[in-house]
Image (cartoon, rainbow, N blue to C red; front, side, top):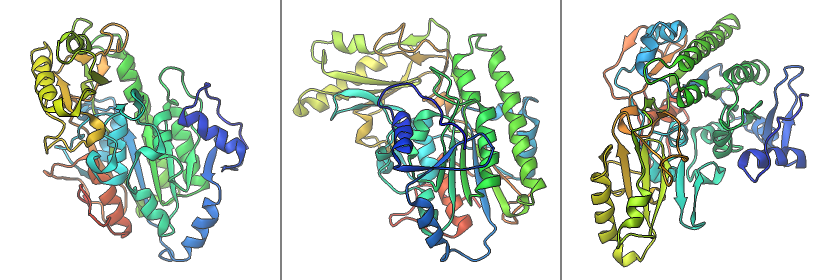
Length: 440
């Protein structure tokens, strides 16, 4: 058995997960000499084995969801990603695909696995102002997801499921839902993610050792290098290197499926959770000081910054909320770099009360940094705003249900992943139905 991954001190879900392993509330699975650690909730494997008796006998179907975090659709045609391009061109591709508001990592991964929008899942953004706590926090708790995921639906039918998630907060928000999950390591300080080489090694090992029917994988390097690449808004050397490297790893994964005979029984869903936009140091928006300087709003507006989007929360008297929303929108729309400031209750957003009262999106080439315009968001690469809506989305694999060399004009979305997986395995839909659409 390998050593447990290390983590920094603090009561984070990642640290708490390791504490649960050590305390015996979760079980660390032995995977020979593979050098990776998988865990499961205590008793989960026994329950899965018991449920397996009711699963379709001899079911060889496999589904793998690979999220190339932060990838832009045009980057697949850049010449840097030949393996991704071949996988896309050989299967079913959706050129009009998009991320959903807020175009951030956590909510769109949650939408992928629930098939539902944030007004149902309870997860509208990476960061929210928690009214109960009276502070801003990351949505990284397993309890933040208020509905069932397709992972749990498969579990109840006796299928094996696995998560291989490179980012600490994704590890936290999906908790112990899967039959087995990777304990990501090594975690890079500040970025909070494990490099793709380690993530792909864990994915390959999970397939070979545990053989889940569904495996959900996040590859975080493209996103992380895109955020921090200071080589300019057009050069982006580090991001290009990440694209090449991640593409080679995806090619390695496909080769493994083919060499082990899994390909012909599998679908491989590849998509991004959002794309990426870059801004110069002089194109930074900070709304907190403007809100605080207003005689009516001063001291009564909390802001949760999400890169290309700010969530604004009125903390004053409920009776004054309507007036406050009007004033917040006026100030935001008068600020250079702001694209729009819809009310959170606008029906098209479907973000739910966790997203506050007003959602402010920036223009392409800008970013938010709140409350401090200098220190809170110095990174040039951001997402969350409409400029980062377009994503790659395609389905490959050798299973007969995957059309060969086909393109669809349908507007596929991140929320379509769960219904696609559910349809593939025939596990049905939730009582209130999906918000997404099965794309196979």
